[in-house]
Figure: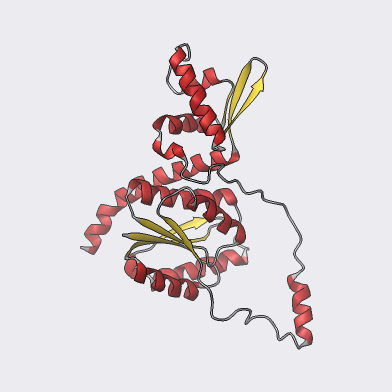
Length: 276
């Protein structure tokens, strides 16, 4: 069985029609609908996204869609939300395939979707191509066209977002290693930094005086550094161990995924009783 994930902005009908095509290929078991969850109530994009998420939820009510907020203009928020869904579905529930619909995603969120999809077997990305484009643009033969073009070009840069990507563009090996996950989890609990490898080993619950333990951690940290998840920095006689921005986003995603799994597994028996 398969799962589909959709971010909703301006085109719920386009998303729905694309979904109907996808489910002809694969039986869809569950649908996730993501919407703009920014807290600024004056944000008009947020209002559009929430309204259309409700519309799409009603249209797909048969699938009992799971609605989740996300900040589509934050790489970390988008990455964490998408990773958590894929991790839960593909690694914990054993879902065969997750389709990520980037049709309505802003470019930054679509980039995050691409980064996440590279990390999971069974993840696929698709976009729905509309039958018409630019129907809201004034006729180029009219004076209104030039005014509209100038108005659309009135935005100014606020910041540049450098997108974090895995160094190895295949499945990150931490997904299959409890010790690597423990190292990253420990660093995350230490606010992303350990003063030395010795401090890290102690916080992981192992003995740093044992040569085999030190050798094992040296190898694991080298692999995690190659994967772009940690950074080792020489400071005097010690080597500080840091989570990279990608490592922080990944661990935040794991935490969200674990919480999602706990909540869903608690809710599932009640849903089954209601719909029995």
